[in-house]
Amino acid sequence: MKKFAGTSVVILGAVAVIAAMVVSGAAASPAKKSAGIQVCGLMPDTKTSVRWEQFDKPALIKSFKAAGISARVVNAQGDPQKQKTQADQCIADGAKVLIIAPIDSGSAASIEKAALKKGVKSIDYDRQVEGGSAVLYASFNGHTVGVLQGKAVANALKGKKGAVVAELNGGQEDANAFLFKGGYDSILKPLYKSGALKAGPDQFVPGWDNQKAGTIFEQMLIKTGNKIDGVAAANDGIANAVVVALKAHQLDPIPLSGQDATTQGVQNIISGWQTMTVFKDVRKLASAAAKAAVAIVKGKTIPTTGVVHTKGRGIEKAYLIPPQSITKANYKLLFTSGFLKKGDVCNGDYTQYCK
Ligand code: BGC
Image (cartoon, rainbow, N blue to C red; front, side, top):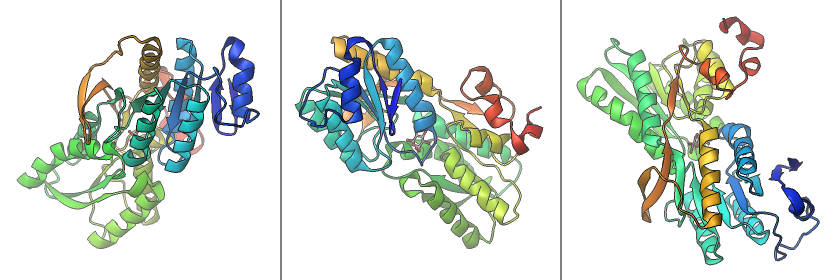
């Protein structure tokens, strides 16, 4: 694998030289076609979750290699215009399939439609592209993710009648944020209704921005006079913003959900600051997306597990993978499955929790 400023390429056989030239910028004109690239993976950003760079990118590169396809994986750093430019470059370089994790549906839908006009097919990767034209949605079951999050927070507050639960949802630009919220609300709302729990402040975090999540949670603390007893937080980055705020105010740990099974999330779990995270084995997702891309390139049937309803376009074929809840009781499976390295989690201050 060669790396060029944020761009990773899998280069196979005779196309190596051409592909290397294209990626290094030697063949600058986007109009120039190269047979070097068959598929592109377009990742959204590096800041809303470490997953895109740390898990998805290497898993995709590995899967493309295993499938014998030449591919490139790039990251748009949260800039929709950049994602469009990256997509155009991929197509100019010969890509027949775009695997796209959108930043927002509007911009990604226009990428997909423009690609289709040139005979290039798209796969919605992890996030649905509303109004798009992808041939497959490859992801995890987002509703189940939210159910696992809601159950963990509710269980941890069992017997604490009227405990106040705040919700820190993902970004409204992302269809997933609504799937996750729908999942945890399906557990929490009946409990609010019965009086077992009390609905606290409930806010979306624009663009999944972890820093904004911290500011929003600080405001929630002020608004409630610190009376927040649990938080349904949509991912590990948002959960960590809660942990940082609680520590800053010398408040005790409270039931708190997360998602992505990140190193930091697991460190917060083992040290008692986060209740759970959701393990989405991105290696399975990357492999499914790569297999679908191969099927598209070869004109074969794409494997699916069912369909989803995607706003602005209706039924979309889907390949959905079940997510798994991770707590203090089972976090070690992340090491045995090779998803995380024990040495990354169990170091420094955290060594003491890794008995
Ligand atoms: C993904 C999550 C991720 C979040 C922020 C969601 O669409 O499903 O895994 O944490 O975006 O990047």
